[in-house]
Length: 606
Image (spheres, helix red, strand yellow):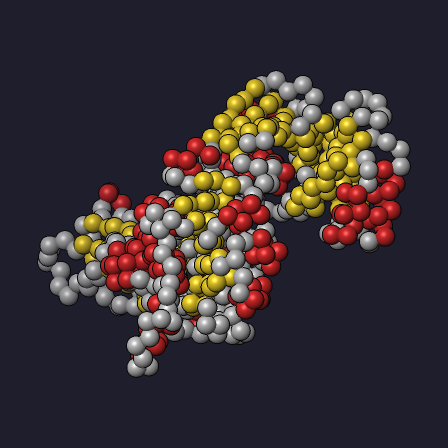
């Protein structure tokens, strides 16, 4: 609850004198008493010794206190200030200890990048209900701690799209025409036209790595400049790319060979960290130019500096860095590098838009229980969660597994089929949980059970669901069928007892494997000695096998089979290579899933 306010309207004078009148009082200081015979309530203000008086109308209003600790556009403040029941408290420049103290009396907080909400700050904040980040990145918020505390975290994913796309293009143009060094030369009193010959964008090929909101905005601007646009994104359909005039690639190694300019617009994850590295730069055209206005670390800074110094890369335009400000200035100080201090969203329009969006999100949640742009929870009641939590977890994990098993393939659509007991549940939210798992690692935006379906639809991915009361071998089963540009992938899972999640099918292979933690899935011919060989390899590399499940296409040895190993620790590249090198092994995949019992990332309580 927010702070409760009692509004009192005193009736016209009925002969009493010196009656106290309170336009509004904190409910903690008011006592109410109902009189017999339907008479009006009486109130006493405990801090006022005056006699009680009748009131003709009593209104209760919950007032929510919203704390703002970073600078916020006046347009955003105006929305909050003009909303009845919202009290705005602006306090910038606070120390972490002061922020923690202020949060004790706050129902919501709006921050930008200047405030970091750590686990220590969020611990024990019983009143706090929501955090709104005026911007996209939430790396300055401890999501695990916020979720654990039951605090909704929201961001503003659309507010800075245009500004960041424009900054990317401005950097590309300035890099191409040597605007930075030419400007510096003029300022130093020179008139040097020969040293700054540039190159035009028209007719050049631009590779866009990551076709989210910003990536697509950059692509549309590149088309207007008559550039040939290539795009890499595993979760944009061929049809949607063709509609947008983008030549779509599913392999980063292939797209980087064909471009004159390359710009990255992916989130920073374990998979995208260093995605542009020495090996891939070496395959690019000599004279390529690289732009990064997304996240520091997507482009390996040392490898980029080496490539520029060798002359292979003509130049780079960088707005983001691993360390901000950069500690190692080798890359920044190269004359071929155009650098700005993380200015992608630094426009008046972007700051106003994210402020308005953040204010609207907070008002919608506090006043109407409406949740939008949430990054850590979904609107599921406690009773519903009791029924759905295992099925949500199963569906989510099937999505995570599927995404990793079709890596490098172009996803066209997916179907999720509910059988037996699963068919009687609220399957729409289960489908969203599957879709969230399927898409979350590939996009630069948060995907959860609230927005998963719309995110998929916007990218041309069709998610279907069907249900059947029949289930041959299990009481309940959830199956998924993914259609890619290379065929189909199928997986099925079930729940043993009340909590144990199991993977029971991969394509045509049936087995029972634990659906948690680190999985090594290898395809092979079922021959004697192979299991012993793999056990020996992992033993030599100090990798413990916790569980194993084997599925055979035919119920006899010698045929095609698949095995799932649950590992207690990560195998080295050398160990995996040894397994792959066995003549009877035809494929190896590593799948990373949450540990057993881990809560869903977008629910406050599971």
